Image 1 (cartoon, helix red, strand yellow):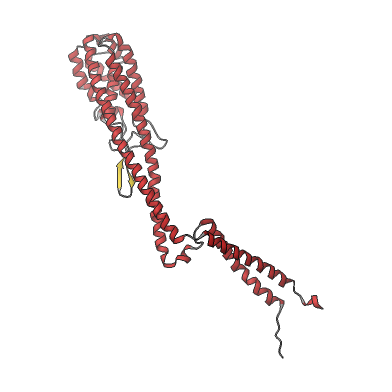
Image 2: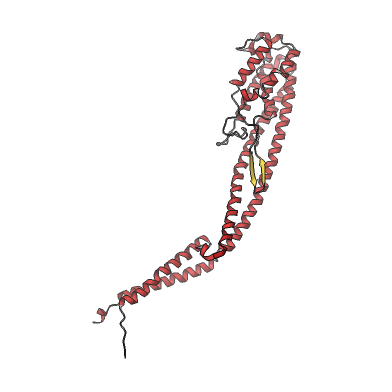
Length: 349
């Protein structure tokens, strides 16, 4: 008969060596329960890992477009609200022009309304979303429209005074305005005055905006114009009408000359209102395109996520059962190791 030597250390070492593996398996199972996917995707999928990477890249790219569209949608909404304010002010001004008779009786109120409307127009055109000016076109970092009381009004005063020989420091209150004939006023409105709202004078005195509007990628295969700018014809026409009524001294004009100014203002404002409506309609189409693109891309994201889940996902019930089994084994291993550690021949001497 032959006996072999077995130490307490050899017994306990075998039990202790199983603990790290069990602990690792418990950690993996716990991760899979928490995330719903394999703890080590690369190890589990092997050669199909590349497919998983491609799907994640696709999901990220499409989701980035959706996130960018949220900013675009906000900008379009701000622009539409601003255009609505501009249109409402213009319509109110047009109603006043239509209701006031072509006499000097209502000139004072029209002058005040013209100046107020001009201030409102410049303020609205300088609207910002906190990051960029929405009416500046691609030059969105720069405030698009100058304060009317600065360079624009100085240019108007100079042209008005030079044309009719008025006091250059305050031409609106010069008594010589009463001597301006209808023909002379009509000529001024169609030439020197109109030229102030055309390039290059418009860019020199009034606007720092770009004529080029922002274009954004709204889907994987689609781009759209997502802004307007302060240089469009309707904005120039409104500025022209407000300045025409507010700062040409209409209260001092003869009835016949006043009629020329008011008739011109009515025509210009009517054209501007129509132009603003067209701009809103065009941006409304863009809003619908963005919404439609978001719906389509949301479906792509959902389908991609389903494919990712099929590749990387784990069965929660199976993972929970495996977790419970591993936890039980680990607890038994702890208990067994503790018992073995307590064994000593001294207990039997």
